[in-house]
Amino acid sequence: MRLRNIQGSRDVIAQSPLVVHEPRQYRDEWKEAFGNDHPIRIEVGMGKGKFIYQLARLNPQINYIGIEKYSSVLLRALQKMEDEPLPNLLFIRMDAEEISEVFGREEVDRIYLNFSDPWPKDRYAKRRLPSREFLKRYDSILKKDGVLEFKTDNRELFDFALLELPFAGWEIVSVTYDLHHDEEMMAGNIMTEYEERFSAQGNPICKYIIKR
Image (cartoon, rainbow, N blue to C red):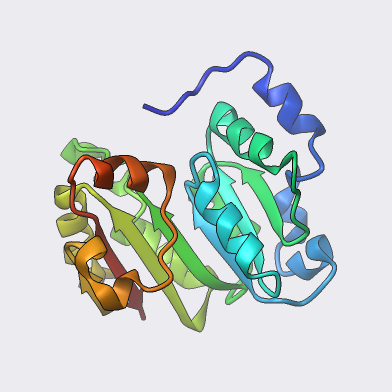
């Protein structure tokens, strides 16, 4: 379970220069936040930040933004940055439902979803990050030639995500039900904290890459 109630986490986040506190002001103008016009890639529901931090470290020519709802989880990501802050990585604390209010049309180059909350009860299906409702939000901010990558160990969530694609006008580029035994899709893979844990337990990791 994610840690959600660490005392003082909101105060630390409020004082951090690595967190964009008024992200709506940068809508259509994220180049100003980074001071360059490099491509922008985002991770929605980044957890403790290992995945996006490694991506940013390996790809200094790309700007990354990690989005996380829970203050105590975002705090863990900030702690990872203390020793080696990266100029091409920023964070936002917000609910993913607000994403189209923060990014303009075709402003994002690529979107990552990793081990998202499955919201297992049917009545909460619209809250699932790979749902058709969220895919429509991503469509409004992703470049026309951009892609979305989704990883999970939850087979039910993955099957649901695949079924949602035609309803939102997306199609599969690549798909695997066992990422760590798929040589092609495993190339360049960066593991999240959850991925390390679940794969060590023998759980197969599912992944798709999709486009419109």
